[in-house]
Image 1 (cartoon, rainbow, N blue to C red):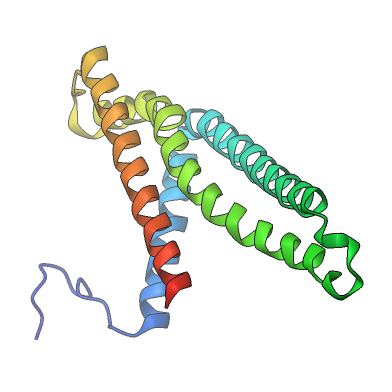
Image 2: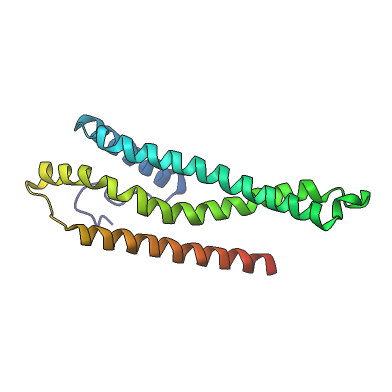
Length: 169
C-alpha cells in the first residue's frame, strides 16, 4: 500500500536497500553543496571537525596508555615474569577505553565548536530556497550551543554508565 505522496516515498525495508538509499541521499546532498557553491561554507567546519577528532583520538589514547603503563610500573606488577601479559593487556584496555572517552568528548566538543560555524551556510540556503533567512540573536545561538553540549554530556554519561554495566554482566 502506497502511503506517501510520491512514488517510492516509502523505501523497501531491507537493510541494504535502506543503506543504499541513505548513501545516495548523502551523495545527492554533497552534490547540491558543490552545485550551489556552498562548499566554501563546509570546508572550515569539516577541517575543524577532522582536526578535533584526530587530536582527541591521539590525546585520549596517549594519556590512557601512559597512565595505565605508569600504574603497572608503579605497582611493581611488571617485575613478576608470570604477570608479563599485563602490559599488552593494558594497551588493549587503553584502546577500548579511549574509544569510548573519545566518543563522549567528541559529541560535546563538536556541538560547541563546529555547529555554530554552519550558520552562514544555513543562512545562504534559507535565502536561496525560502527567500528570507531566519534571524536569530547571539543569545539564541549560544543557548542552542549550550543545549547541544548539555545533551552531548548527558549522552556521554549514559554511555559510560551502560559501558560500566556491561562489564558487570
